[in-house]
Amino acid sequence: MNRRDFFRALEKKLAGLILLTVSAPVRSRGAVPRFETLYDYYFPKHSNTVLSEYRRMFDEGVLKDNPKWELDERWGSFCRAFRGNEKAFHEFITAQWRTGQGEFGEEWVYMCLLLLLRLGDDQFAKLLSRENKRTRELVGMAIDSNIDWKKHPFTKTRAVYEYRYVRDVR
Image (tube, rainbow, N blue to C red):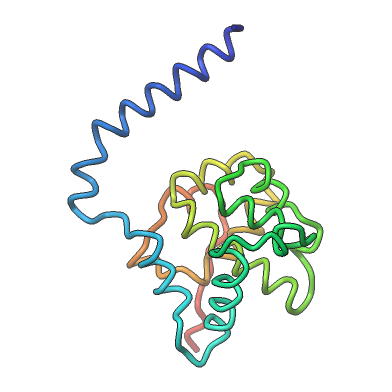
């Protein structure tokens, strides 16, 4: 085992130990909502917005095991990233169609949001921080206007990019 691998293994063990030591008090305070709670909040089942349409698509294609979606060019890497595959996260987040017009760009935005909800602040921020500045900023632009920052701060993720959405209050 080389030195780099040794320190990675040590880092994982320490992180696990720290997580075991610290996680009980944090959870008891209710600091981190469960995925289902966040999913219901950001993608309500019944609303007159496009978010409910995306909810139906996500329910059908991602939350259920649906091999058809995992073979799709656009949805495949997203489905694997949703299940925690780090390589697939990179593939999805850097996909050519991320800057597409119309529904393709919109799909990517809501898929980024869903990945944040699913992976959580720690894991999403960790994976996003590995990407180049342009990618981090594109993701920031995608999610920043869609998060209720007072209710769900996602502080680690927000620290990874500089973009901040400012509502027009005219």
